[in-house]
Structure formats: structure tokens, C-alpha cells
Length: 218
Length: 338
Image (cartoon, rainbow over all chains, first blue to last red):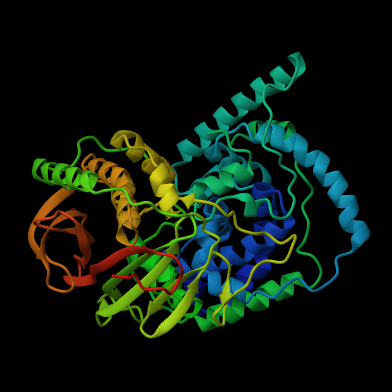
């Protein structure tokens, strides 16, 4: 009998990771962008997510559905503990080739303009949520995982995912109300999704980097 | 699931368009991943975080080995989220009494005058275990000397590690072939300054709260969700261990850290232990079913003189150290004068 993809991932078969990469790297990349606001960082998060997946592969259950929730959970953790993940895979990351291809400039520019305005709007609301709420939104709303998959990704009970989403919705409604009534209640740390934003975080500060990247509200 | 709730949330949060990895980048990242995976042979074991921390400071080649030594089970980077709430209680009465004495002794030390440009120099004898080829049994290093020079005020200043005949720059930037590679302008960079609880300088240690409860709250908050294998209390103990292990701790902060440790549930006293060079002492420990971490103090002076770790499943020592010398020096690589 042919071993399942899960089995091969568990066994540390690099080709199985090639399949994982083909199937899920785009989703990881976009999730990472939504959590960090930077495409450049999102690329690094993609690399780190798969290196972490390799490290954590023994946790994969032999039976189950798609490994996407698992990878998404790792992505959330890589973003949250970016500097630590980067340190852990420092040698591997040092060997990551620099982006050599010249990006399509016009394309980039158009996207940057569009992206900046949208991001500003997004941050204003998103940044008011707690990190735990941001993560369930990233997974349930943007990565389109169902509650059970998000719960699996985050390693929390389904009820927790549900209650975080409820809280997030209540807060966002309240914020929408505030916006209609008048001035923005609070200014957020200058977020623009510019490269180097992550770099402004203190090294080794674990969870805080991702939180601040999101305009954290702790 | 409640589709209405999801779509309402989606409508309240403008979502930037998704896109593919640009151009050849997807292939490049894929190839890089495969190369790295083939480089790292399959290994599985639970290793306490602190050993990882130690390995992380080693040269890249070894740091990589560390990354694979430390596989699945343990982990700060795990994907489960553990709440950072404290359990009630604190150290056992005997441990609390000893920690109070240790804290008082630390507080009596004089505060040295330290310049920002200086380095902390720490010389120790160390041996740590690794778990090879999926084995559940740790294999200990040979005891060997380790010397580090760590910047006093700015984490971006390059330090130095000399261990097993190798000189390695210590830097937050990648170190390739013994050279620190600074990012080019525009590339993501690290933040310079005093560092954080997870990567402190002497100046950061000086700035930590002197109130033990406040300090412990800070540590719990800072490590929330980490240390899945040991839980929030074990993680707090580990973090304090990380802060005192290879650092010169300002007296006031040292006292606060030891008083904070007395508030951590599960902290116990272990009598009659010796450090890696046979110096007798008394230990403060934290353990769970998998292992035990011990900080060893000189019985007379109550100074920190080393530590030991056990793998309780394998009944083996997994970490054994002795602090031999601590001093401030003006350059990385310089030995303290007499």
C-alpha cells in the first residue's frame, strides 16, 4: 500500500514536502502578508513555515484531511515568534538566495498604491483587535478554514475559536459605530507594510513582534 | 459553521487581493526548502528550550544542527497556544526560604560602574546533551570550556564566542563563514538597542522591574503561549534561568529575579549537588514528568555557580555547567585583568 502524504511527511520524505509546498505555499504566502503587511516578509515567512513544518513533522497525525490547517497554524506562530523562528533557522535562511529577478515595476507600483490605502483601512480596524482575535480572523475569514480546522491550526478548542470570532465581531461593530459618530478614537503606530517594518521590532521579543506589526493593542 | 458571521467579518475588514509568489521566487523558495531539508537528517527528540537557546548562539553550522536536534515534541515554536495564566501557589517553603536568602545575598553585591562600550565576559565549563538519530537517549558532550563576550548596551554590537577551539562572532545578523552579514539598505533588519527579555543586554537587565510580582507578570506575559512542553510555570522558570545563566546580572535585578522565582508554582529545593567542576552547592529546581532543571548556588556565598538538567524519562543528565569567571572587559576577545 502506498503511504499517505501525511505518512510521508511524518517520515521526513523531502518529496512529500515538495508536494506540500506546491499545494499550500500560495495560501501561506497570502496569510503571512495579511499578518505582516509586507510581501518581502511574507516570503521569508513562507520559507520559515516550511522549515518549521519539517522540524515539527512528527506531530502530524497519520490520519486526517488536508495538512493546510496545520501549516496555517505554523504560519501564525512563525509570524508571532518571527525573530525566534528566524534565529532557529538562521543558517538555512542565510543560504536563501536573494530575490534576483527584477520585479515588474509597473505592477508593483500599482499594487503598492492600491495596497497602501487598503492596508491603512484594514490596520485601523484590525489593529484594534487582540492578537488571538486577529489570528482567528486571518484563519477563518481570509484563509477560509472552517472552525474545526482553525481550532486545529491554533491548537485550541472549537468553542474558543467561536468565542474569539464573536468578540472580534462585536469589537469591529463597535468600531464601525465610532467611525460613523466621529473622529478616529486612536492613532496607530505608523504602519505601511514597508520593508523593514519587522526589522523595527526588537530581536528576540517573541510574540510582541507580530503584535506590534499588527498595531497591537495589548 | 456560521457563514453569516464570517461574511459579516469579511465585509468589515477590507481584504487585500491575494497574489502568487512573484516570478521565479516560488521555485527558488521551493528549491531552497528541499536543499535545506536534505541537509538536515531526520531526528526526533524533546530537548528543553534552554538547550536550544544555547545552541542558537553557536555558529550557524551548529545552530542548524541544533535546529534538527530539537525536533517535534518540545517547543516554543509549537503551534498550540497555551494560555499564560498562572497556577496558584508558589515555590515550596524550603525553596522560598533559600531563594529569599539568595536574593538578599545578590542585593548585597556592589553595583559595578559599566560603560556602554564594554562587554560582559563569562567563562564557564559546559556539557550539553544531544539526541541523535531519533534516539530517546541523550548523548552528552564532553565537558569543555566556553567563553563569551556579550555587548553591554546594544544587541547590534557583535560579540564573540570561543568554544571547542572555534571563534564565532555573536550577532543578530547572519554569520556566514565567520563574517557578520549586515543587511543592505531597504532589507528587513533587526532593531538595535538594549534587547528584550528573550535577548537582553546588561542595560536591559538593569531596566527590569525590581518588584518581583511585576517582574514575574512581565515574564509570564512575555512568554505567553510558549513552552508548550513545560507550561507557563516551567516557561517562566526557564526564562529566569536564561537571564541568569550566562550574564552578569545587576544586583537589584538578580534579587528581583530570585524573588520572582519563589512565586512560581512547582519550584523546589534540592540539597547537596555539585556543579560541573565538582563544586558543592544547593539547588533550586523545577521539574515535570519529563525533566528537571536545576540552578546551583554556592552554599556559603549563595552565588550562582552553574546548573544541571535531567531527562527524567531516560534518567540521564542532559546539561551540566559551572560558571568560572565573570567580568566586564572593554573589547570582545579581551580577557579580564587581574
